[in-house]
Image (cartoon, rainbow, N blue to C red; front, side, top):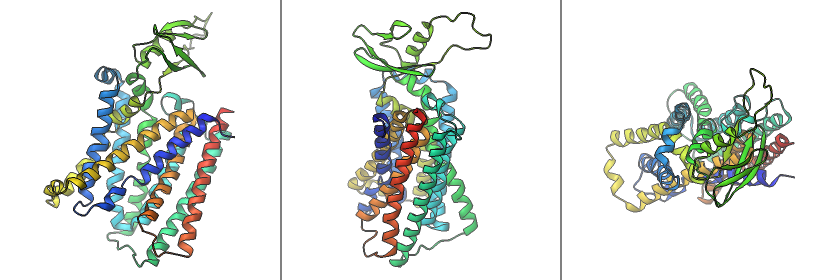
Length: 415
């Protein structure tokens, strides 16, 4: 039986995956806008405007918080974001060289594998630092879930090929096929960097951008013990083994420092021993947006620059102002993306120490289901019967099984 927090985390990342997979649905309603038009607008809206607006309006003293975040966390998040931005550009080139179906299969397969497995080996920040090892029962269960996920991805790809054959819509490709395969493989590995941008930078960013408020509840982790603590109206929290600590009105990072400073002194500590780590969590949603605002900047610039390059090359900047309806639809795409990645990050945190691996695996499975669901709703499968449809239905079932196995693996980490 799945625990309540595991179920909640799985549902949140699952919702994020479905939204991500179907995020671009408004482009099917566009007539004037081409790819570069809606991509430019949606990236500006979803990667820059929305996360920064929520961060600036929802986080107390955001500029002070930004100055307090360790530089290495900002650089690491943006380094991974840069990899994700490059993956997006390479993905578009691969569509032309080897086709959409094969590109999608390689990107999802390699991206899901890297995103789920690497955090088991190289631990993330914050609560992800305590993720189970890849050889542990939970780690092995994650590997089984990833294997099932890959089976679903391959079957969905076969169904996509069959659909195109049935509709006589075989994709015309150009350029070197082998070069396209290599490029798709590199892009697949880099595509997981959007998750890594969150996993490896969220700890310090959220800690500095979230603030403890009176009459709220916080999570306090001392060493490996996590407990919920109520913050009273006067701003104090009664910490077990520590006593009352004034924590309201300061960031979660400063609150953790105050609690750490009040820990009982150990008698005769070993020369090389360190004081136990203390982490305070407020559950702030705006602080989760702040991770994307601060850590996704490099990836945002790559995507926007690529779209701007295409707009300049095609001399089509003027088209942006030709349809306010399509401009609004492009903004919706950006909002969908911003909501999707925020749900992914929040769900990962709810899943706990193993949330980086489990959350991204579930997100990828649900993203593909959302993608295929959009295809069914928009008529891409109209007139297709027989083997391709059966393969796609079976692929969706396998992807759901993969999500359940990954969620179950999270309970093993807590056993």
